[in-house]
Length: 271
Ligand code: SF4
Image (cartoon, rainbow, N blue to C red; front, side):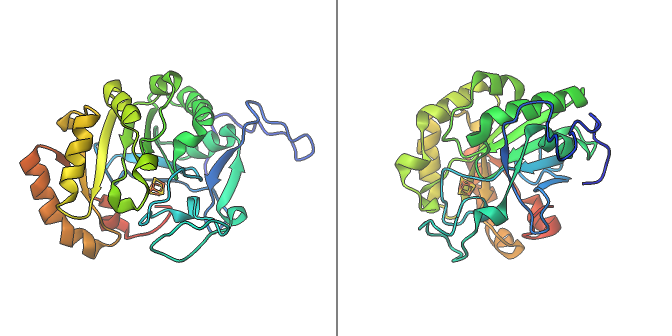
């Protein structure tokens, strides 16, 4: 990655191989060119759409959604998960092990104070993100942290103290994942009570609304915190679905979330 690291080079030569900071290694998604999936772009969804941000994509997920657009973070060759694409992935080709210091240095090098932690499911590596946040907060006075999570794992109070915005995306029956695995109303309710969480639902059919309303009521999610986003993996499907999803959002008093990325870049990785 280009750019000067704000902490200089803390890493000793390959022989000493000692990092200042914890030795906990993070599993970060690896791009086909071998670099970590850490990139500078505009946030494409939710409340902060259009905000310049540095995305850090961690590997590993505790769910296996049928239509997941990042199956290279979890759909390993020795697993029997079903996915719309038959492609399976090799861990050694898709994961980079980096220290929180290396992750923070790489992200900070873009010179942008807004950071989005995504996955996979980033909360599987919660402790390491604490260290990443502490390092970035030292480097940027106005550091702003956002996380995208599936809402099945409760973050700790230390994590909630540091994070500014939690984008929860609970998975509906259309994900193909068992309800007992994908929905934890206690976790959703505690995130709703934190006052830092928005809840983004991917809507495929008008019938999904009933499921969303039930979850909203059970987890006591304020309407003002709900975002409906059309299911789409291409600009064509986005344009097909945006009309009716936006009309439902308007009628129900929910927000509508677009998919700015699809409009700007198409279904590409690392942008
Ligand atoms: S929770 Fe997110 S990352 Fe995990 S499988 Fe589902 S869509 Fe993919």
